[in-house]
Length: 297
Length: 246
Image 1: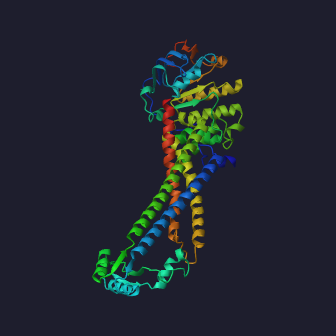
Image 2: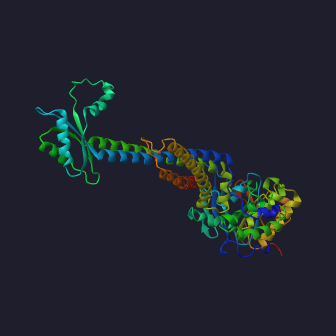
Image 3: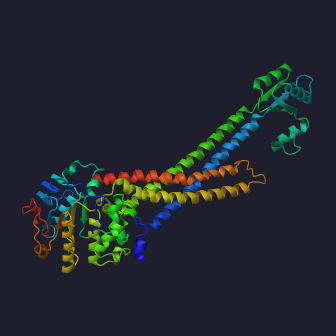
């Protein structure tokens, strides 16, 4: 019976190193989890930036100053009327004094604006997102109406949001790359340790005619499997954390800072494959380098 | 052994020239003085030689040169007609597969079963498990380990380990068999059995070089003995070698 077992399938040529493999797997799982969270954060940051840019681009604000005998309300109404006639403007609304005071509440407090305080009057302009007018067209319409007004097309804010979004994306992508590098470094270390610890086995295999590539492939298969399994565990943990974040971020599932989508969770599927790939490449390069160096020494 | 027919991977076609040819070879470890000096040795195909000498005379070192575990400090080493100094890193494994080695300390892989240890050269050579399974089983039965296929080396007696080491060395049908102190750890009777095994392999065509300091064992055969003393071969080697009398 025991003899049948021996002939059922060959044993692993490299001895199992359960403790080392478990430790390596734990480290890779943690790195994969962090990399997946970073990748999802990058996607969410990208979505947040796009949403904000799109919202800012869909409106403009005009500050109107009355001229001569004009009251602020008259000037604002006139500006709204002039802007409503510009092609690409969906709606132009003059904000009344109460609305203007509400905007100042953070600084003056509720009802804190004195009655005689000369409040600038604002006109909000909703733009057709498909064919928005240019800032020049809006400014020209205001000038033609003889108004003293200043247009804010939110361009500065959009540039800031785009820059911040791009920075958040770059940081997240950089983090993913660093986690990948850290995983590779850990695997390089484990490969060196394996070759060092099993020098006796490697030597016997060499003398029996094993090629460097054969020996390298033994370690490569083993660590690629460890990395793939650990990658799956790390990815699963990241998916659970992301799902918990999404479910806890509001009834509509929308978090204003990082608007994660369910589809973003699919990014974790790449983790086991990438982890195995990084492990395979790291082992192959390290093992071949060590074996060649030993042969020359 | 009859089952180990002509389908073994290792073992190329026999050359007409000598299997081993050493000319003016020296060898040293690191910067230490040479342990082998001015070695001239030729082993023709199918020969059987003993390599004798006191402990530390350089027997194991000479074998290391021959199984390509160490480079000579000078001189020419030719194996199967090929100057080994011209072998590339990629070519070396193919030459090593034509050489079977029985180490003095066996060097069995402790994490593998008897079966897997014996099959090692065939796995390394790329043979499929189904392709070598029966061959290895028959070989292990032939060396008396047929009932211990699943045993681990640590559970074997010294003699059994010795026979397993021999099985591993010959399973690939090597053209050159190098054996280091085959009787060093076994009793006289086991030593004789191992010698019979080696002579049988020689009869099947392998060139055999046995390093030993067991002179009584050498005296029981008619094979020529080369003697290493102070790093030098002090007896002229036989060019033709000797075959086991039928």
